[in-house]
Image 1: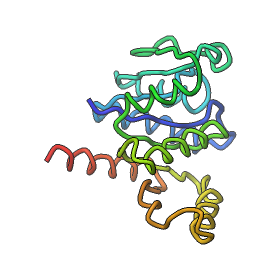
Image 2: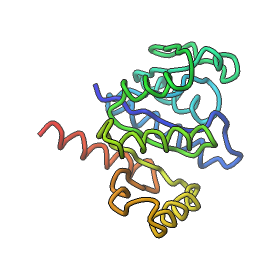
Image 3: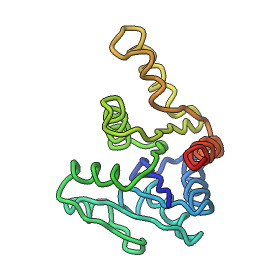
Length: 185
């Protein structure tokens, strides 16, 4: 089974489109009989992704550090909840369990997870797809920053190929459908 790691906020924006996209992503992953790997919380965007996948009888694996079980309100209705010692082991376990990574809107933690998994790919620690879903231009300033880093030669232009930028959940699913089909051919 392919598993998709979803990085997203432990909070939910006041803009309905973000929560709706989390719901849609969880359902679409489950409909394809793929599993969801996520931060293990029941709240915010991450909780919505998990609940949506579970509503379609999808496999949902949460990975949460012991110290965050209360703060992020650990989701107890998952297929599996893995508890880790700290954030470092959480991120390593999420990478180990996953075949691809999708980034939805979120805050500092979401960006931390994105940049770490991107750096790991840049260094050759994995070769799994990473997709940013730029819903409602949420990540447009990040895109501008990354382009500036390329322009200033802090990032090689070829490193832009290490991740994919899409605007909708549908586009992320189309990309992964093609990626997994190619891997089985």
